[in-house]
Length: 479
Image (cartoon, rainbow, N blue to C red):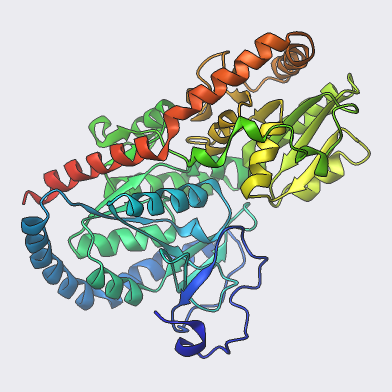
């Protein structure tokens, strides 16, 4: 991998991506330009193109994979003798070239591990708008794509399959003992199959509730059954499976048929030093919303603006709540395919504001300036944004299913509610009264939230993950 100007047929002045630049990501090198099929539009039938591409790519590279298997076996024995406690891990996620919780979390976790002496690598696919594979920030490898198509019901996201030849060269240069797959996507299927042929232990992390997303976003019922069966096969291939919360540990066992002893409960960690209650009151909110004198109680939703976050429900609740009070406001922070529909829904409602996609101190300031954070999603396996909000002292109102309810834990940190319009309306009334009439109780809640968030540090999660990886590698290789 070298610079774009010397390694590809592109001119040095040509753009490497037609999308707006994503906050905090810088291209540090590129792959040479490689063949890839034309990007496909979404479609139920078109998804049937994916299995032939996956298995065809694996078969085509079979001789190289078997050769790599022999090399890695000898290399692993030698490495274990020299470094008996070391375990080398590759995290793979198709969605790294998008803005989402998975990508943001991994882009924090892996550099932290590398800075603290853990051997960790991060790889995914480039988005279809890039002409070449790239390396970002010196450590995140976005592989050249062989195939990609827009994901059904999920605009601005795609299903992608990487070119395998660069992966094989990288694995020979940077051998790994474990590959952890972050999503059950087409690229992860190919990496899982190739990893097994190459003799590498393959496991997975349950970061996305794909069956529920499918039921929410795709109308064709046969696709629900099809996706469920594919997920059951995938999690049979990629065991053990790490789950971040109790609800999804149960779903893995009951719905996806993973044996209970192959599910490991392990909460995630975040770079909490980027968020602080001290950022409250510095004028960040006023750049996008009203002043305190105009609207005294501030609510926010921060995250991907899409239907699977249960935003249609939140919209209906807020429409009724804001009609009762002229001193409340709601800020949507983020971007997604559902954003335009929300803007139309609230056209003429001056209690709702939109800050767009933000990062850095602006994002942290919006969290801190919020009086309450609203997160009605029932499909989040963890809830990075809930931890981020609480780390700035902002109480969170979340649904009673998924990872966020484990984070909030009790009324000291916010509220946990079923998806019931009346209960959410009552909860928002309680929040308003708490902020306006019970100042001491509200300030104590902010302190409790910030304290609760300290459980989810990168240090705690990274140490726990690597201890588990060592045990998995020891059990698998028996060296």
